[in-house]
Length: 287
Ligand SMILES: O=P(O)(O)O[C@H]1[C@H](O)[C@@H](OP(=O)(O)O)[C@H](OP(=O)(O)O)[C@@H](OP(=O)(O)O)[C@H]1O
Ligand SMILES: Nc1ncnc2c1ncn2[C@@H]1O[C@H](COP(=O)(O)OP(=O)(O)O)[C@@H](O)[C@H]1O
Image 1 (cartoon, rainbow, N blue to C red):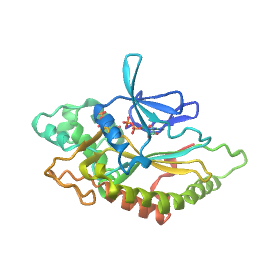
Image 2: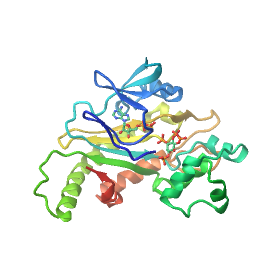
Image 3: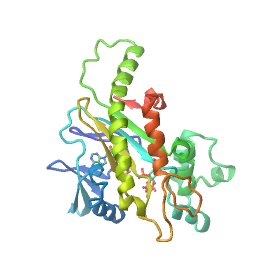
């Protein structure tokens, strides 16, 4: 996942794969087609979670590429503030672990991403091979972020503001402005939206029957009364085996398929509720 901010007019892509999205007409975005994601979105359109999922309009082929058509969640917002939180206690599928054990493929790009963050993270052997398996990389990312402990991690926050900052002089002033602004929205997000989402998840046949891996909650507000939370990215969300009844609120152990989604929702809600937003280092706020 890149910490990228790409802007096409007012549209912003906070995270995710480069080149996966295209802005389309009529308040839609196009996301590179994935069968797994399309099947999930189709099912979600008839599920209690529908109000929390961008409207799905089927697929389209453009320039020889297939895309999923989604409602543009930023459409109509002048100065959106967006936060992408990746949910769950792990971001790799169990199949990735099996592959790492049985048929390991070494990824040089992931080794390089790892070394860039922490040159001491790879083992002696990984340094020698200049590669790590995808499972090893994703697990390392989970363990070195809040994913494994809190059940979610903040991928990126973006604040756009057209207020006049010219006379805002000191770092303290800027910090205070940012924090007070974000804080004032937390109340809305926590008390209303997170609770409503929690209730919808508990009612949802889709949620009961799916292992939700690597999916994000996209928080969007525009500093007015408009605030929303959206479930996005179902590229690694798959039906759980019929023999497994997922709870979503217990830790993962190999074979139990648990994703820990509700652990993340609960801890995210309590972090926000206490107003302790210092979980997000200031340098990660992109203006
Ligand atoms: O965020 P960083 O540390 O860059 O790592 C990324 C994210 O984990 C991506 O997950 P997501 O799409 O949920 O953000 C994952 O894509 P997958 O969805 O394919 O697992 C990428 O795997 P590769 O696409 O194999 O590189 C991996 O390189
Ligand atoms: N329907 C949407 N409307 C507006 N922005 C979106 C929408 N879906 C995704 N995005 C933006 O794109 C980013 C990456 O989305 P995601 O589905 O996670 O991509 P990937 O599968 O490549 O990881 C999000 O963080 C968000 O900023």
